Image (cartoon, rainbow, N blue to C red; front, side, top):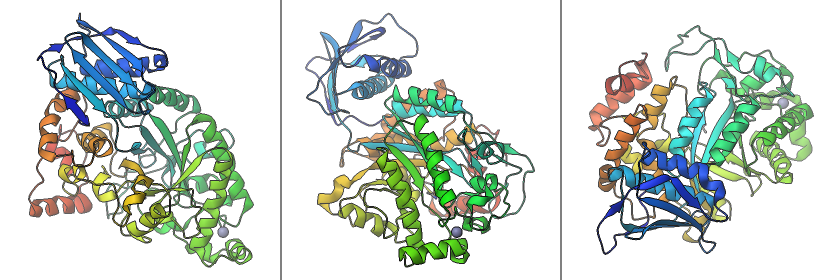
Length: 521
Ligand code: ACM
Ligand code: ZN
């Protein structure tokens, strides 16, 4: 719901109803039709015999995501810098309709985003979600003018992309026999869990997202978080150990199970798999993980150690840099750009790898990312204490999410443009249903939308809360669970008690006390 950056009332007061069925698209904008109509339908669910035909005109003088809306006595029209901008204009119109009982008020909007990267990550590994969940998220993302859906497709607990070259990734790697029930206890639910998306399903999703202005960024995490891949193909690890797809979460005993950096087969496997991935995902960015790779096995592995000596690498962290650089160069030759999590920013990592900042406490913290940006590199900010939506509201209240400022400390003013934008994340260790997923995501998605889009200095929490009210009605209309009454942070003592409950006894308590009461304990 990002507030437009310029909104002016016209001399006359009034409003119009829109005839969605007769929207007209000028040259260069015909591809925007599906996205525009989908957005307008969110603002005005019942087709009404409206007064006004909306005209969309391509204006090449505008930036690709920039648009202007004019609505007055003579009718309503949109100037758009591209098809994507036309979709964002339609999203703004839908928002105005929502706020004004289905009518578009007279006024002028001039708008463009603060950041070019406005993303949402969904972890479909820790818990697998049907493809229909991703469609529902894409609708909301476009409505809130997000333009990147990051799919975390490979992790210790499951592999979620159909591979024809490596079928055991699916027959073995996509399934685990059981799942840890709670933080900090060993109890397992004893139920097998898994699934994967076929290439066909993903290609259709890619087209659907593209029609709504959204690029999908697939992630294959490496060299760590690789247990599902190694369970399918143990020979890719350092010691050829039999492994099972992980049934518990976190950095743990299995986190040392990395792809072996000293084996050519491991590199060939990754490249072949990336080729398959690139056939399905045509967009420039591919995420290659790099986070939380514990080096114990690499320290003991003769092949890894011998490669280190041969290459003159000082330590295992440099070995990781070497491994990721080989993958980066493979992607670069094919016109793609690699992204790596900030704890994987090894000193020798290629400068053209985009950094995704998430954790301030590991491997150099924000300083490492800031230094790369100051040296001309690119970064995306996903600060875990601000935009990890899986964290309970007690830990990350809505106000804290809203107040997020993406320019990291230490970044020089002249390098700020290196921060390409923001990305929220829904990790799903403790999110095992659509109900909990949407509960943790809404209304946070609306808050972060404004961080990504709205100019610095134009964000005001109280104003945001007023504008948020009609969105609750939208969620209800779409049958989407959301967190109620989270506008004001709880008192600190209560927050601490709820965080303790989340960590020690019941990861679903917040949902149960706030939501529909159907959540499991
Ligand atoms: C991460 O949260 N491990 C990127
Ligand atoms: Zn090795």
